[in-house]
Length: 367
Image (cartoon, rainbow, N blue to C red; front, top):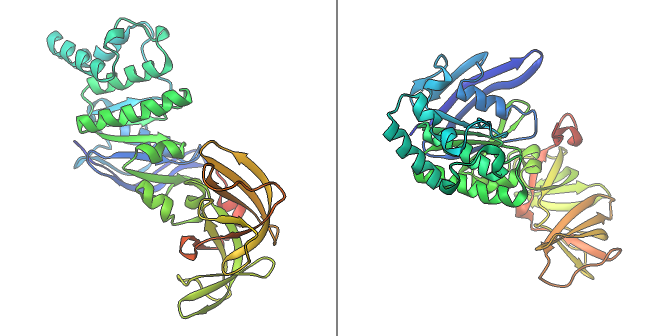
């Protein structure tokens, strides 16, 4: 099964830069996600790999073969769209066996393939049903089955779960991953849903404005974001602005607004530099009646949201910064709105980034 490489791929639509010098290597048999906000270029990149769009510059390799001039039907690619894209006048059986028949397979082979893939997607008992007689989840299973029946070695999925209900989305995303792994396929899955990509991907490429921001495993992206945008888009982060007031013996002191000092391990910032601290909501602890000490800030609980397994506290710090603290709902005593608390965190859990030239608001925008 193929790996996929893009080398310096760019694409413009008029004045809009959809892809800006994108280089990416997706490994053989990997379930890979392209993740980013709407308009970041992820679908354009998928369509360039499929051959549905020609890049303005750069090269596309599937396996070791340069495919820039290879038509889509000869790339051994299966494409699953968000809108199902089934033939409405054909039942599930004819939709699935369409690919093998068009490719000239004999009837017996086409039928064998049809039965195998419909069994795989658990729709063998509905092979006579037409698209308007099936649920959204079933239609998307038929779409996946049709791609597999056509002999695809590379499965491309463009927001395949976008039109489905939440419960169906959750179930089907694991089913699609299971099928691709069982068949040893390479899969590239486009989504703007971070929880979806984190749950099923071997690796993820985070995209923004036509560029790759970061590539890594779900754990790497969450625990070691390489930028303010990545820490904001993958999961959730609190951002605190400040200046590096001193660096001594590997320890860095950052002064936040309100002359609040935070001590971290020095990691490359310079004295006097303006920085941004990114801290995950679950990294914070919030305790009532605690004493303000190292890396702790007094605050007041402004809002509480019960989210089932967790409780989300919005706390206004003494310097008027607002932070989110998330804690398990079944552990300990809940805080109350208006309660005075002390917020603290472990220094090694904070990420420090240089303050962006365009400002923090512009840096985390997901236009």
